[in-house]
Structure formats: C-alpha cells, structure tokens
Amino acid sequence: MALGENLLGGPPPTLLPADSAVDGELERGVNPDQVARDHPSSSLAWAVLADQAWAEDRVVESYAFARVGYHRGLDALRRNGWKGHGPVPWSHEGNRGFLRCLIALGRSAAAIGETEEVERIDAFLDDCDPTIRA
Image (tube, rainbow, N blue to C red; front, side, top):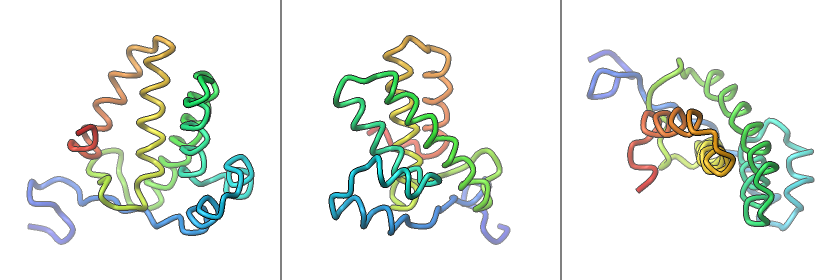
C-alpha cells in the first residue's frame, strides 16, 4: 500500500487545520457576524451564521451563509491536498466547519425545494464521512 493511502485503496483523509481563532472568538461570545467579517475564509464562522439564521426561520439567509462557507471549505480542502473526493472525517475537529456548512446547505436546499442539490449534497456527505448523518 502506498504511503498515505487508506486501507481501501482510496485517497487518505483530508484533515483541515483547526480554526482556533474563530473557536476562541465564538467561545468568548463575539457576535458571529463580526467573526465572519474578521475571518471571511472560515467555514466555521459561516456555519454558525447559517445555523443561527435557520433557528430564526430565515431559510434563504441560512442557504446563502451555508453556500459561502461551503465554497470557502472547498478552497481549504483543495489547499490541503483534497482532489475532489475522499474522506473528510467529522471526527477531525478542523473539518467540522466545512461539514456543518454542507449539512446546513442540504437542509436549507431541501426547505426551498432544490431536490437535485439535496441529492448531490447527500452523496457528497456520504463520500466525506458515511457516518456523519448517524
């Protein structure tokens, strides 16, 4: 087996760096809007905004925040060696901002009737971490 290859012969898991600055600001109670302004490339900041908007029944805003965080996460994945498929495990803390955005995007896409997008997101989640929805 080649170095870095997983046991099934696929690509190794992609592990994004921790977002400790964002984590720290959110833990200190900094307004998530300000955190996203201070760290616009952070999927975690956008995931928090998406979840907040969802909780307030602002579905379209949740969708938009999740979409931004999802694209920022794709950029981060590519910078960290991801080739468009393969594991992005939830168990790794640094991956959770991106995965939370992906989950939020699927949830809000379902709410606005984007059936094809929901199917793509479900398949993407299964590729990233088949246990994530459990």
